Length: 318
Image (cartoon, rainbow, N blue to C red):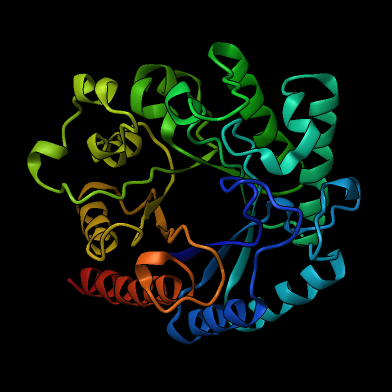
């Protein structure tokens, strides 16, 4: 069973892009050492601008890790019992880390760059079993205040998403994506998404009663983010035959993640529930206030992963 933490090396996927890496290595080591000590066994590393890619060094910023430094850190993680998994987000909503290439979506040049980067990362990570490819929030409502908005729709979105998954598979990794597309396009998603792609539906709200467990397309279509009305997606993805790594978070509430664990133990089959991912969505910097992200929120998320291990173990005994 996977007990994973999403941890951000790069930040140019959401924040206004910076020309330097915003990352505290002392905090990184503190978080990952604690993960190893409590059995949190997977670190999903959101790389972005945080790596000097051998094929495209122009994407690096001041402080980006060299391949040699990354390999050394991966070795250290494995020595702690933590499996490192790479994440590159190819959603048009979160691809500022691609710099000029983010303005070239779906062109021949773009596809070449995407293939190059996936190959680089797969090789540096010693051909991991999973490769998280992002693909969340590519819609008008999440980009409406950005200076440049791109939204792939219809067959083009499917072509490009599946292209990234196939490139990951070429290097021995299963593609892994956020499940946003299922929320408002359930039938299309079930018909077009390969079952080989691992799903992470993310649910960060506090609605866990029966009224939240049924699809409400009217509310989903009316909501800016839709996420508060999608508790049903965990069960729908299971019924659709997808393997899942269910994602909760302590970004808004300390009770969300344990409630996601409890919900999925009841509503997702053991065969397709690969584990859980906690996504604090903070910067890896020193900050003692969990409400502001940073080290305190990450360390609290690790504690929640430890508690999840105990909850799953208790469920297995029963």
